[in-house]
Length: 168
Image 1: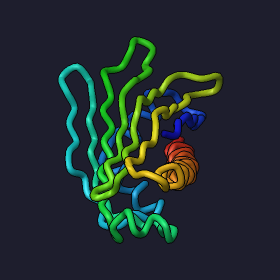
Image 2: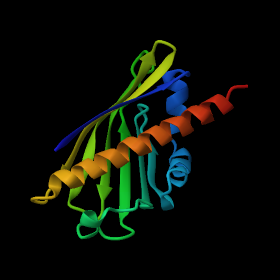
Image 3: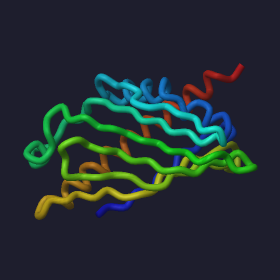
């Protein structure tokens, strides 16, 4: 098992960041930006109390290393789920995220939080990557974690650019 802890900082309020990232349309833009293929919104719901669930699916655009090609099908499908609880009084949000990689012996997910920070907001991803294969499981977890870090960096920059472009 590998542990995940990533933070993305934005120069906007948690409410502004959430308004952008909690839509299926924006999640599809991110999928396209990071190289995913055939992105689709599977579910986008808002509960009466303000909770939000967004589920997307895509074919992965990741080039797999040799050892992983035997374990993960080519052009596999990844389903990402974000479930956000209603906002706290200060506008912060807590929730969970998961990434289900169809046909792969690996799981990823954990808690996520969007809260106020010094000059805006911080989006925190925590959780773990687990591979259920002997011998090469650690290598597979490291590969998935490295890829996740790169995707989060690209996603954070894309999100920051979109937020900056939304200023009037």
